[in-house]
Image (cartoon, rainbow, N blue to C red; front, side, top):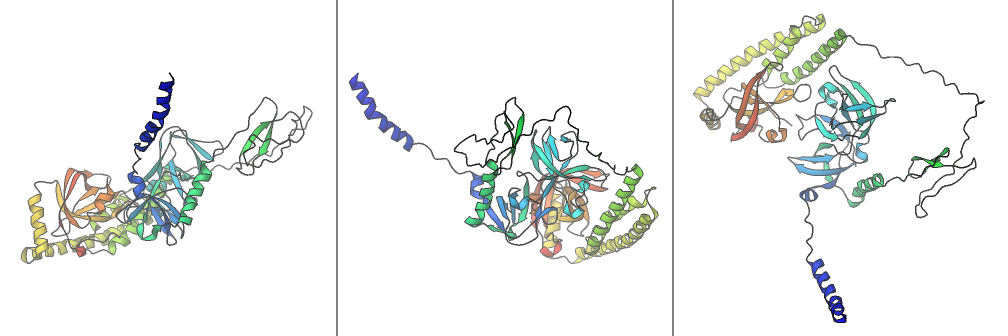
Length: 463
C-alpha cells in the first residue's frame, strides 16, 4: 500500500507537466488578423452603407480623431462596426410594423422578432422611402431608444440610437491605425459598458429610492422606519451610496395632488390626395437632380431615354398638378431632342466602326459577338446615373461596346463584386425580363465573367 502511494506521488507531477506541455495553443482567427482599431484623419468623413462612393449612400459623418472598430479591409474601404463614442450622434431606422412595440411614452421600442436596422439616406434628407439598405439586425426582446418618428410617403420609421452591431464603410484614405493611447478609448468604453449593475434586495416593507452616484442607476431598498439609512451590499465594492430619506405614504386625509391636464394637439390628418401630391412633388425634385447629372455626361452614352420615360409618368398622371406637368413637359421635349441627337451620333459611330475601328475595340466587338451564344447578354459594365441606389434602386448598365447603347440593366445583389468589373467587357448569365415599374429591361445575374478590358476613357468614372 505504501509502495503504491509512493509511485503515485512520483509519477503524477511528470504526467501533469507533459500534459500541459502538449496542450494545443489556440490559433488566431482570421478576424483577429484583419481587425484593428483605427483613427479618422479628417473632418466630415462619410460613413456609407456599402463599399462604394457612387452606389452606396452615406448615413452619417465622422470627425477628425474619431476612434473606429475596424473589422476588415477590401477594395479601398474599411468595414467598421458602429460601436464607441464616434457613433453617439449617428442613428438607424427601424420600420414601424408588427415586429416592434412602441412604449406608451414613445421613448423606447421592444422587439418581438428579429428586425432589420436600416441606414438613413442623408442624400434624400433621411426620407424612409429612400432609406432601404440594411446595415444590421436587432434581436427579439431587445429594447431600443427612440429619438424620433419619421413619416415617409410610403413607409413610417422610428429613428433610433444605432446599435453597436451594425456595419458601415469608410474610405481607407481617411483611416489609419490608431496609436496605443487612442485605442484605449474603445477599450475603456467597452469595459465601462460591460460592468454589471447590482440590484439591492427587496422586502415587503415600503420601498425607498436610493441613488448610486457611480453607476447612475436607480434601485429600490427596504426600509423599516422613516429615519435616514445607508445600505452597503458588499464591503469590497467601491460604489458610493448616498443616504436615502423614506417618505411616509400619504394618509387618507391628505389632500390629493391634482396634475394639470395635458393638452395634446393631434397632428393634421393627411388625405390620400395630399399624400399623392407630396409624392409627385418629391418625384419631380428627384428627377430634376438626376437631370442635372445626366446633362453633364457625354450625350452618346447618357441615359436620356430612360430619364424621358420617368418624366412621362408624371406627364401622363391625370391627377398631376399643372405646374408639375409644365416642368415635366419641358424636360420631355428637351430629352426628345437629345435622344434624336444621340441616335445620329450612334449611327455615325456604327459607320466609323465599320470603316475604321482601333484594334482594342475590334477585338472587344469580336469577342462580344462570339460570346453572345454562351451568355444571356454581353456588354461593357457601367454605372447608372439614374438607378444609383439613392432615389431609385441600385442597378448597373450593360453597354454595347460598338455604339454605347444600353443593352440591359443588371441587378446588384453583390455590389462589391460588380464594382470591381466596371469598365470591362463581361458576359452575364441569368434571367432577362422587362420591369414594368422601372420601365427597363433587367437581368438577375447568376454568373458574371470578364471577357476583356476596356480603355479608361470609354467608361464613365464612378468615383
